[in-house]
Image 1: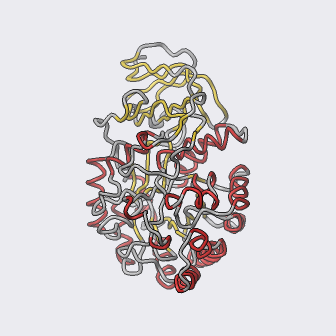
Image 2: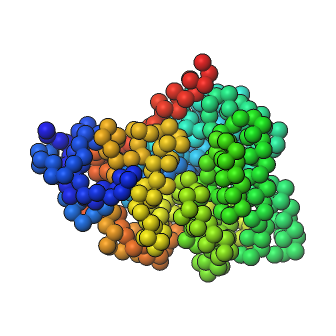
Image 3: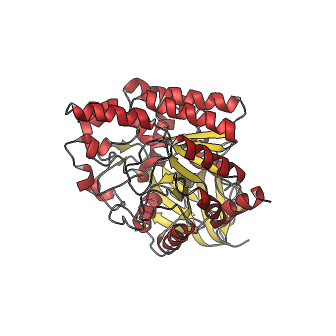
Length: 459
């Protein structure tokens, strides 16, 4: 057999372990896995000594286009993700102008993504108090799911939901067979505590963290689970940062509820002490937690209590970060390029099987959001999406290595024990360590799976 591409002698990460195999690719699909496949290929990739992971699926990024292209756009954002071994991403609905809360805004964003993205992508639709009647159109247009905030989003164009609109939205999303992603912090708690701090002129690192305590996350998660039990809505909790919230969600699973959770690399690698040390680049919501909480969250991941690791890449211009009043600084971490490397670091440090990394970054996201078996694993018939990693070559993050639009990141100065050698999306080399981004490669919009889910639920 002749292949379009042949990846030779790589240590391939499979669900049941790592095996030294060749991978034969035709028309962007894996057609062969085996030892010593014949070298009949248009392109041969020598992966000797390298580890081949399934391409990461980052279910949580903010690319801010249209309207805030100065923060991040699909071209720079997808380049950044590709440089980090990511081959598929889901863009969140809130930071574009307009936000993605109706059919027209959704379709306009699809066109931008199809024109500019270098890797595959899907789009979240938004749930806000005023768009309940738009949810069905968004589902039919191909939204991978819906996103809502239980506390102020920081963006006046994307209003958080109150209890009534949350219940109403959950009922509607359940009827559509959809899934709701939630930023879960208690609005009354965080607004009350911030007002108290600012009234006393307390606006530093400790004050910001104390205004968004673990209890605010726990309360919001608990309430959302109760509402989901009432409405039958499937839930996905984003950027969970506390041990107690993980336990609440796991207990809901044991009761039979259809719920998953993600955390982010910055909650696993950094603590509140790092926030104080590194400054405003570490501001996010929820905030970086105290060291015992961080350590406990890592332990939850190691014991399979966390389903997915995603970046929550939330960029801005430096002028939006550089504020003396921490409450006024934009609350987001710019770090989408380093999610896979972060999870690999955790796995190596704790001597975990590399298949666990693939589970958290590819297999579980694909299964949860209906992309499996097309994506998420290295197997015959799946898309040829790979991150080829050199586990023996450390990489120190410097500003000149950042592919994001605004060249600052919490991860600057951090040394990862491994590095990305190459990223392949549907059999096309989109990034290589030697040549950087191949701008000729274009990603695909993943619309059909989410459309089919909505159609199935309404018939």
